[in-house]
Image 1 (cartoon, helix red, strand yellow):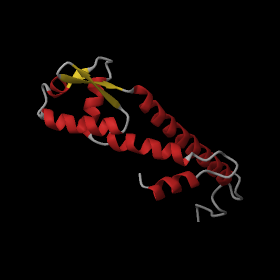
Image 2: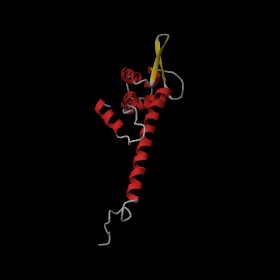
Image 3: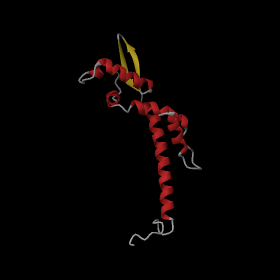
Image 4: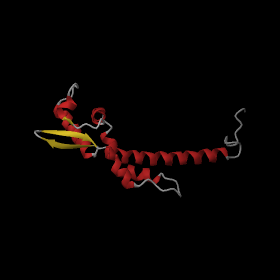
Length: 140
């Protein structure tokens, strides 16, 4: 997410409520960008069983080359979603659940703010003169 988009999301927070922290959004943006690719989502899903896997294991049974898997794992690693560790001559990769949980928390904050905004809108419409129809008679 670009800085201006992050800033505008943070400024959408209603007065009196704690705005989404810009730093939290900036920290979560790489996670969402990394997960925006189907191949990377599949790699994360494959690593979610808790067992470290080699690039060969992750590429097995897919049309994706080991070199492509490596590039995708590097993107996921930069986002903090996976961690590679040396094991003999190969590198094993494992999922980092804590990073995804932080991104999930950011989404929860955004959802809560939207819920609050929609509740305020609903309250405003329901308390408007004319029962929320703006005084317009729908029958004529």
